[in-house]
Image 1 (spheres, rainbow, N blue to C red):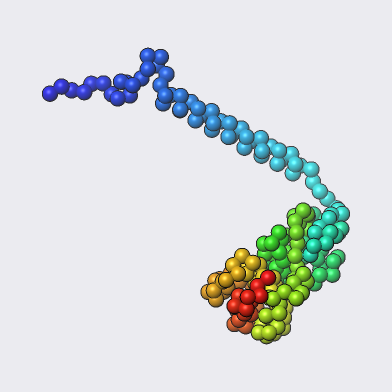
Image 2: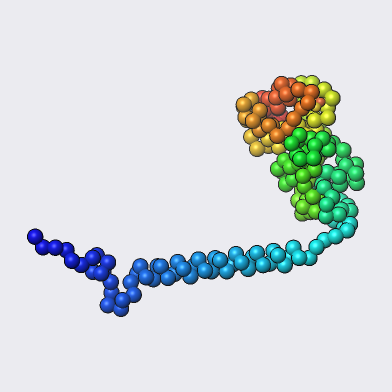
Length: 208
Ligand code: FES
């Protein structure tokens, strides 16, 4: 029986000696080198930008509850301190220092964030909503109707968290609400009534 002595690759190699495979291999290397160069350039630009330190108190513009406000902030100043100490918006609470309680929940561009875990300067150019902007909203009304608070210390954080969650999931089930609120803690243990309040908003059709 005749033996196959020529490989398929050798059989298709053009007379020039430069195959399609060689071309692809070469262009891939060029693309990889370009990507590395671009990444290195981006990192260099970031390092350059970071090399200009901001120090001392700065005047910054924020958008809080639909209004433009001018505040003073050092680079270390948290959004929570600005809200409470300069704007007198004391709904968000400094219950913890690591964001584990959910007491400082505010909406930043519609997403729930912990104001004590965010620098005021990071909030520039973003829309900040505190619990004070939810007066008359279905969520705080449902909290009142369901008696969903005891000491009330955690309540503003929960109200904002429920509003944020139901904005994303207006027809949420009880299980989904329980899972969605797992970043907020209530030391008085009013969880059952908080869930009832959220479900009242879902079922009452007054969500938002
Ligand atoms: S009502 Fe007291 S901590 Fe929640």
